[in-house]
Length: 158
Image 1 (tube, helix red, strand yellow):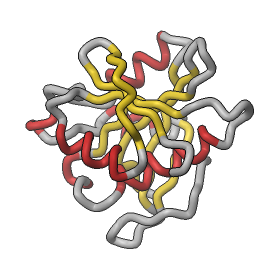
Image 2: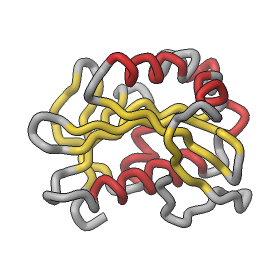
Image 3: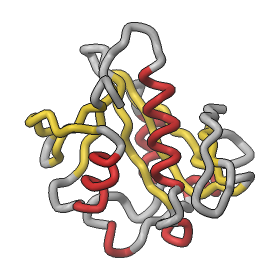
Image 4: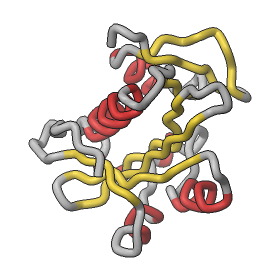
């Protein structure tokens, strides 16, 4: 479990946990709002399959108190940089600060790993809500693109 002691706006304790036999179905069923499907899959199950088929990514359940409310994954690139990807917060759980707590928890944990490597993520340029969230958390666009997505890096002072 990765626990930074953060809470959402409802006061629920937000943690990141391994996806296992007890929670994988709940994680797979996480679904974003319909208007977000241009940027994320209809179900987090797609990300679970990706992590099963790849040595790059590791899936985590986003948990508020004891309820699975989302999915996020992390990986390490060839240059040693740490990446956050596959963030999906269930539609019914959005606008409560869960996503912010999940990203902050994972970003801080990744930044504390050996080597002082940068923490990066990417988002579609039309996803203005994601851009605002990440920029408010100290992620700065690098000018690079990952496919059709903007690459942002956590500022060392954040």
